[in-house]
Each structure stands twice: as C-alpha cells, then as structure tokens.
Image 1 (tube, rainbow, N blue to C red):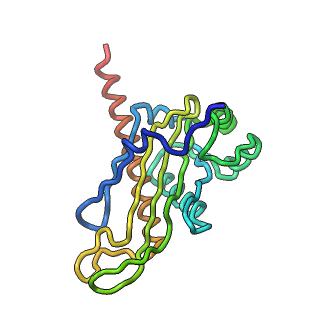
Image 2 (cartoon, rainbow, N blue to C red):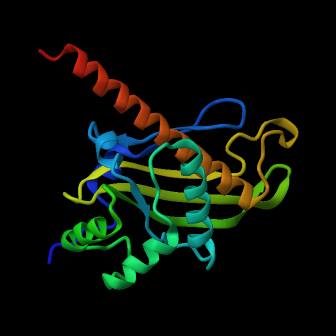
Image 3 (cartoon, rainbow, N blue to C red):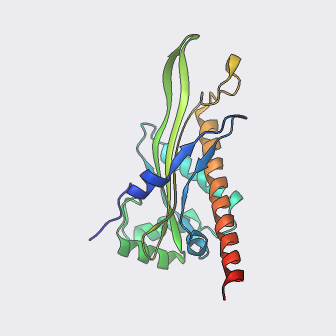
Length: 214
C-alpha cells in the first residue's frame, strides 16, 4: 500500500522561511496550491502532531497552539479534536504523519472534511550559545506544517519554520525572546496568519478568474 511520506520534494522546494528585518516579527513564504481554498472549503481536521524533539510534551503543545491560531485566522470549519481522535482510532491510524491514501480518504469521509493538517515538531528546546558577552541559552523552535487534500493526498499548503530567540536581537538584547513558549506561540500565530492570507489570496484569484471567463 502506497504511503504519503513525512517529507516531500514539494516541501523542500517551496516551504522556506524568510526573516523580516525589523520589529521582531518575521514573514514566511509557504507553498500554496491554487486549489487550496476549494479543498479546505469542506472543512479541516487537525491531526496529532508528530514530535521529533527531545521535549516530550512539545507535539501536543504546538498542536494546540496552531489549532487555536488557525481558528482565529481562518473562517473554515475545524473538526473538534475529540472527534478527530475517535476517527483515528476507528480507522486504526497510529501515526498521523504516515497514512495511506485509502485511509486518508476514509478519514476525510468519516469526518466530513476536505483537508487535514499534519504537523511535525523538529525542534523545541533551549540551545546553549556562547557570544562575546558571555554564554547563555536561547529557545529554538522548528515546525513543519502540511495541509493535504483528503481525496488525492496532494499537498495544497505547506511551510517549514525554524526560529531562534536571538533572530532579531539588537543592541542590549532588544528584540530577543527568552521564553520557549512565547517563541512557539509567535511561530504558531505567524503560520496561521500566513495560512489565512493564502486562503484569501486564492479566493480572490478564483473570483477574478470567474469574472473574466467567457
């Protein structure tokens, strides 16, 4: 049975991180398929995130952060996590980031959604650094998010974000983030905001095409 890999060439090519130069905020450049708005219009299920970091609770913690921010920035319907968990059990799916196309279609049909969100936490830890002013620790967060069409298994939206607490540090430590949780929250908010923007752009493009069609 053919399985959808946890990583793909599409993510490596299109899902890149771009840091903004001021304000402590950063922008991301996700991969967004032209069909993303249509695909998610039927609803989305956020699957349990895979945790590859050394922090045991990171997967669930980041999953919750991302879901909350997606609810804020997207108007699409999201399935209750309890329903998602029950459906995964009934479909006997143990690892949500490695799922057969058949199981993905069955899961989508059972939950009544057009797409699912897969997440992988690569890093979620404090990293020790040594600089001219001395040594210390900075938080590091790295997350990959993918949105899959449940019918085809195709990726319709994806991004990988890696950020460190000193990415925007200025003189006297201005702009530095020392809290791992705050850094993760900022990453989750930025991902969700970018996702919402991609949807609005796709919807706008679709309406424009509709007006110019013969």
